[in-house]
Picture (tube, rainbow, N blue to C red):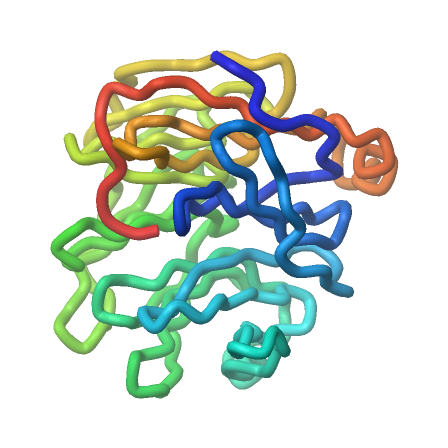
Length: 271
């Protein structure tokens, strides 16, 4: 395992895009891109409090979920940020993760344990509820299944995706024992990588919960993403974790890093 980047305040929401790893640095209020040589560039400076997570529309425009303001913002070609949709009609509580599927449908989770769907045509509705602290999401390459990390439920939960984007047939994809899943990503062999903050590890699991590989670190693993030229490089975003009441202190300490290691299978699906 190699260290690609250090000095982050609190990294989250990594995405491989245009030959670089993009991520949100919540503590520094920045969206950063870094190449495989460790050269970093601040792409967007924000005024958002945490959380803020990212993905892209099919036309290449960046979406940023400003969780505490309850809006995804869209970056226009001139660099300006405009409101993409207002989530307050569904919930005024904090929103979190986002994933855009291969059909241009956008799923956003958070609030009181719900998932919202913004269709490619622009309609907004709630499509799931009762999720125990929803975190990372991934969608299979056929656009048929959405997998969500239930951090407080210590499991990965899956839904079937209908042609109109609706979710149904909720079922446990993997029970994780003492695992506490945060960010996740999917690989071409159908396995899921999940980052685990309290257990300081990143774990690859198959459907059913069998652990295929565990990577331990010296600090909390917040999120992970596969990328690189062959999509087989795993990026792990890590930061010291001292509890919710110490977030500002941790951000000032800048203990965040991006680690990389070769993975057994390439990235698949979305994000």
